[in-house]
Length: 205
Image (tube, rainbow, N blue to C red; front, side):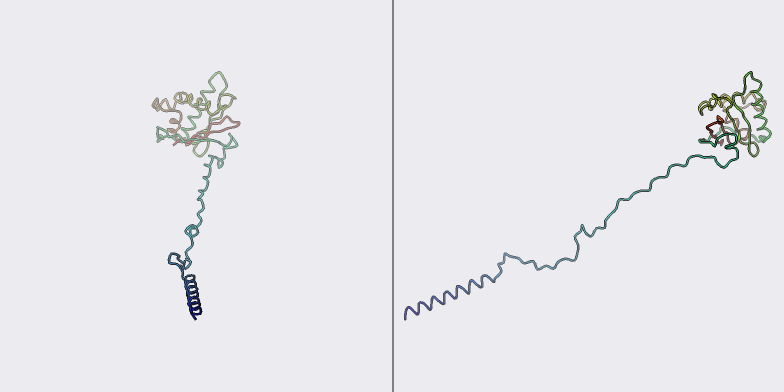
């Protein structure tokens, strides 16, 4: 009887231990946290930023080269000018300056050349409406062989211009250049050329 009673108690203890173990296995420890948060609909920051492309500025167009195509004298007396400049004159146009005075100036320069013992180095004449375009073309191979030499020849022409009867009567200032003198007479531009390969345009303002 005692043995049966002891065995019964042992059986109850075994059953109790088994039940306790089963309960411990199903219970989730407090230290273990379950992730019950719902997945966020918000995409990561790196994915939401729009793709940015580098901004490229349009290339600048090259400056247009100065050309003088729309005129009747280019290609006839001289090549089309490939360069030019603007000269701001220190003088003002004379009230009495007109086509006759401009042609008289050209005639005076030409006469000085013809009176010398050597052939003329350049030809000078006026064209256009009212003879307002002064044209100077080299006649030899050296005087106007470059723009620099042509500038030197124009500097010498200042003295030649002062010797003409017109400027002797006017008594112009000594500091006036050849370009200033042409402004007095009402010329609008001067074209110089070697008559072969190049031409240069000076606009008188």
